[in-house]
Amino acid sequence: MNRITEEQKYAIISRVSLISLAMVLGLNVIVALVGYIFTYYQEVTPADNIHIIRYALYFITLSEFLAIFIVKRNLISKIDINALDLKTFQQKLFNVSIIVSAICNAISIYGLVLVIMGDEFRIMFIFIAASLIAFQIFRIRIRDLEKF
Image (cartoon, rainbow, N blue to C red; front, side, top):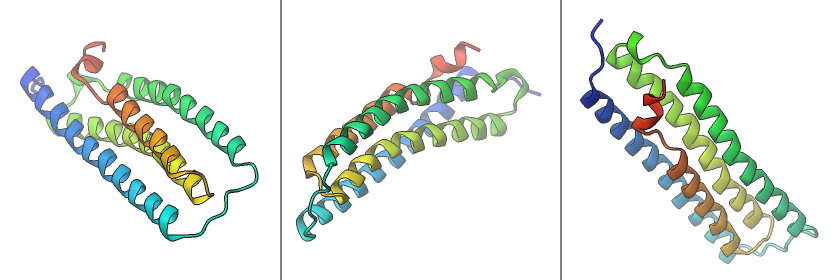
């Protein structure tokens, strides 16, 4: 079995990162549009204890950063670069990237939930920004593979 070259690693990681970025940005745009529709075209009265729910979702968002770190580290540590062919390596990285992107996307959906419950539209952008920050911090990089 041929060893995967550094150029191939860079190409695969670049491709996987670009696809993941498109997924995260696409969902964040959809979340913003749906939140806009709910805010400006629906008469939603805020829930009684919306501030308690908002702070709980802030806490959950912060805990998601830790969850992404742990999940990504565990999944990448299971990838044996030397024992894989190119296609399997790409598929495993893509699986890790989808999981990381999904957890990042969950953060922006928390903001949409708050808007649907009657919170302010601008609060949703805090969650969208947190989603994008999480993706930027935890996206797959070549240095993640160099540790193993």
